[in-house]
Length: 310
Image 1: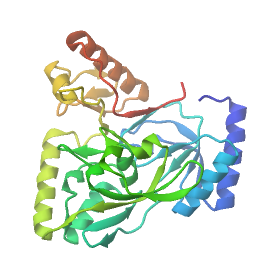
Image 2 (image 1 turned 180 degrees about the vertical axis):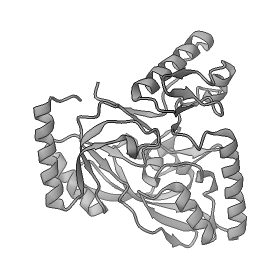
Image 3 (image 1 turned 120 degrees about the vertical axis):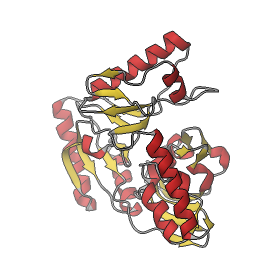
Image 4 (image 1 turned 60 degrees about the vertical axis):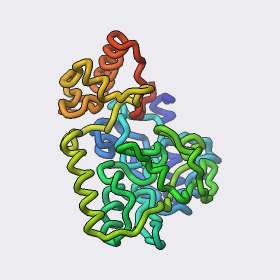
């Protein structure tokens, strides 16, 4: 969606008034680059930060009644945003925060909580089973929406219950079955819901044993992924029967660059941003896809999400 300057100002005024009425922090013309791990992205006309499920539900009802579009932002770890900015308001779930609540061998945590913090906090309390999530830099809500995972395990494997708000502003909870999760998808994204909190199933264990598994997981990621550089995680989904990273590596694409965007020398399915623009990153993505089409006859599909109006 693209709107002219007058329409953008009108939309921003409407959203700002809704935010004031609901007591929601609202930033006007907020740059989105600092809110993403890739570090690129121009301004959104409004950037809203609701602090509770009830407030978020009220915001959704008002936005729906006014016919206003919006985008939902988690930790921004699987996202590339156009440097020219967006026409739509952005609603951040980062302020849906609070302390996790252990319930026997489960834990209920807010959508805005970062996965590494949750994993380590539960290790202190002797609740394991989440170690595979440790190196994923996303928030709980965003990770659940895309069914993030590592090492052949997915967050959907350990989900017991999800509390959400619908685009119409209805609050509800759901106990999903395994069929409601798939490779980089979940019922949350398919139904346009917004996660407010989630209950995960774990297993009791000695804190030291859990911490050792966390260290092993972290060490593997440090050795195989460019964790110290700006990136958005894996760029492409795995094609059937293969690994996108291994395929790109076999085609010698490590080090390929476009401006300040470079294919990581550590993991070929990562693009690292060394001062590049969104256009640099998207140009490099196109180069990678074209090389794979020409040399392997495979059309790679994006795993990373791209936000742009055009």
